[in-house]
Length: 299
Ligand SMILES: NC(=O)c1ccc[n+]([C@@H]2O[C@H](COP(=O)([O-])OP(=O)(O)OC[C@H]3O[C@@H](n4cnc5c(N)ncnc54)[C@H](OP(=O)(O)O)[C@@H]3O)[C@@H](O)[C@H]2O)c1
Image (cartoon, rainbow, N blue to C red; front, side):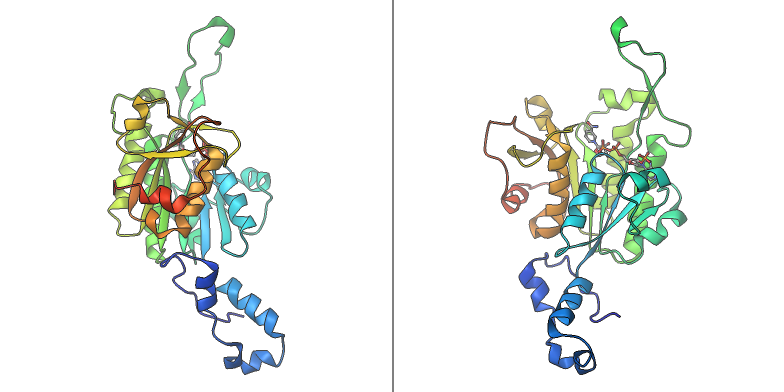
């Protein structure tokens, strides 16, 4: 039973006091009071006013961390995930809140997008290594994209499909994870598999920034499967960090920034590069409001 109408929970940003402000007194619901305790009513009302957040690419390496973190924050979010295959769904626990769909096919993602308040996009074309590479022989491996799964189809058409679908349901914020390097057309990642991956990522970032929806575009440095929360995070612009030693970041830290972006107003209408200092140097970041406040760039 829906006890309260959905609130525009992400604007202003969510906090426990904010949730509390949206709870009408139990006394206005006498028909419910007859059947259940006040505590259960308040608990159910708080749940139904929480924002529903969908993370796409939820079976991916960063996406699954975001999905797990969202699920753990039961007092702040209702989590949903979108994955491409049933295998990915099983990999992240197979819960009913995980939808299977292909972002290249707008119809297939509609059920996952339905009813959401915020969207975190963590889908990406994934280059595959050509068979026959022998690391012991030296040289570099070659990569390719499968037919139909080039960055143009996934990082452009697929992201655009998600943004359009989210806009149609009145989503309040979209967080998009992209990559550093996009200011350089000649970046080596663009020649990978002839995919121009950074060009297509940048195009979808621009599309989001022009959409009118509050957005947060995170252009991550080289991703590492390391522990999160133990490094000082650094934001930048225009790939300037690529000229420094601060060029990598743990996937777990990117995941945390995605979540914090939903909670902190200062993250909205911003696009920024994100990396971290080496562990043991600097102070581990825990004040995300200050981090987002340092960003001055809308694109
Ligand atoms: N690797 C780096 O060093 C680096 C650096 C900077 C930024 N980034 C970017 O950061 C983001 C996260 O990276 P990551 O390495 O954590 O991601 P990842 O593990 O490569 O995950 C990408 C996800 O996208 C999903 N996907 C691909 N095509 C899809 C489709 N047509 N429909 C639905 N889902 C689809 C994949 O699903 P399946 O598993 O089912 O294929 C996969 O789960 C990506 O945008 C990446 O480009 C990466």
